[in-house]
Amino acid sequence: MDAGSVARHDDWKANIAESGDEMKYDFASKEWLAAIHGFVHERARAAALTDPDVTMSFCQVIQNVPAHIAPSGEVAFHFFVKKGVVTFAHTDSDACDLKITGDWAAIREATKIEINNDPEQMKRLMALSAEATKKGLIKMEGTPERPASMGFLHDVMAQLTA
Image 1 (cartoon, rainbow, N blue to C red):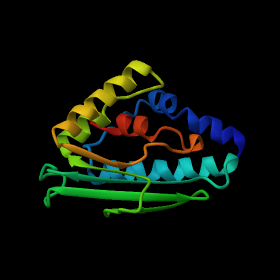
Image 2: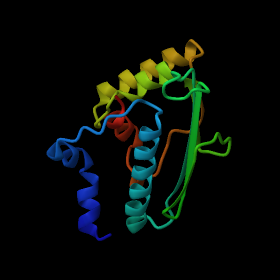
Image 3: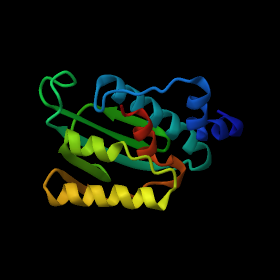
């Protein structure tokens, strides 16, 4: 992947808009997870071009998932990025930089907020997350900080969530 590819990759939202493909999936569905998995791989590859030591990890455990998405009622996934290489699994992990556990509806509502570097949208997300945490619907462990080279995964999740 050359520098031009990285620049085009960073403009993922415009590329989706041009194609007319909304690529919206049920939150936490197999299709949604596959799209997130693919994006993390692409982002890690691009990040490694400018930040060869890029490292981060994330886990999400989603409970009370509708039966048509997960008959067991739970979906978990985690990923580790180390020097541009991604390990992605459909399991829980306590070894991640950030772990979010909670109710499907509460996490979905927060996930659908697209930030786009808008401080007001970030305040909205933080307020919604704080309220859900206060109600016991969401638990966050670790730090939400991430390498700048990996971009803001939350906005990708927002774009993909129906």
